[in-house]
Image 1 (cartoon, rainbow, N blue to C red):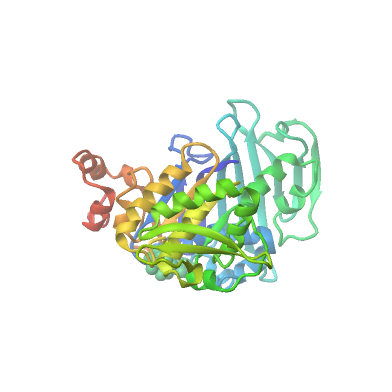
Image 2: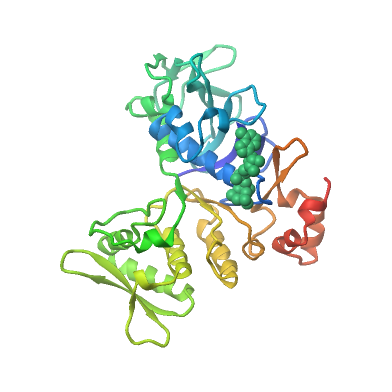
Length: 410
Ligand SMILES: Nc1ncnc2c1ncn2[C@@H]1O[C@H](COP(=O)(O)OP(=O)(O)OP(=O)(O)O)[C@@H](O)[C@H]1O
Ligand SMILES: [Mg+2]
């Protein structure tokens, strides 16, 4: 469990330098909520922000060099902000639960002398006591440095003083973040836990066509990026706890307009298909015959009902292909579903004022492109006009539609 209370991104495409929420050096800022909606005109960096999360996940999975090339990123030179001379840099401010001390993770990626991307710097810090300065419990530059064993104490102060067991570390592969190597070793429990959090991220690019593909009969716990295993996930939920699953289906079905019932059907070969009973028809339809929007809504609701939910989910433009009257309810459902605790965090980018109208001024972040071509980001509640208008009952989506966020110089 855990969530990101703040993130800083530097030199990543149009995001030359942005900070969302609270970080190590911005302790007076408010933490990110469990639902973070990002709005802004085209080209202002919404997809770039979503991709920054994907990029971090890819760096862990396939290494930084391959991550720069994959997913149409086009290599380091096209990825790094134009004109930047510093490395691509991320800082995550992470907290596992309300009674644990936050962890700061820094990752810097640059080109080495032969022009290949590598991990230039990587650092993990945590405070030792409730108050006081955070101490580094892992710090590597160009593949060499140190890490501290153990679970919750141990670390090195900026003045060099040490608590706990410090181990010198030399990596043989500078294209792979150290947390991957060290997190695989039992003695670095803190690193392992943090790594598991990063690995549980889910970036959703649902495609109704993929969801219609014939799926083999294998239960799978989680939806894949494009939703091509929707029936497998349903099969898994059915196998794990049929009663629970039927409850989930009943709840989802109440949210899908025109659908009276959804029923799982098991075939002899073990495969499971979902049958949708539509208003006006006596015979059900299999999921392949359902409309794009229905499938998409179904996938989102299924995602919100995962048994052991992935801790961070990022959805780009959930409104695509959905009827605008469904969006308010979807946004409300998402907001309610993530709750206030540390079990789930949901990031969404959106172009839909209807979606945003169901959110509060603290949930929404606005990306604005400056005259230099780079974007900055600000919480909607921090615009002075928002407070006034919100008190008059104007919703955030309506303010956005009326171009308040674009025309106001603040
Ligand atoms: N290396 C770079 N340095 C600076 N800016 C870049 C770089 N690469 C791309 N860009 C800018 O980033 C923009 C892409 O932004 P992005 O795709 O994140 O926008 P978006 O908010 O998702 O837009 P849309 O609403 O159309 O999806 C491009 O239009 C380009 O101007
Ligand atoms: Mg985009």
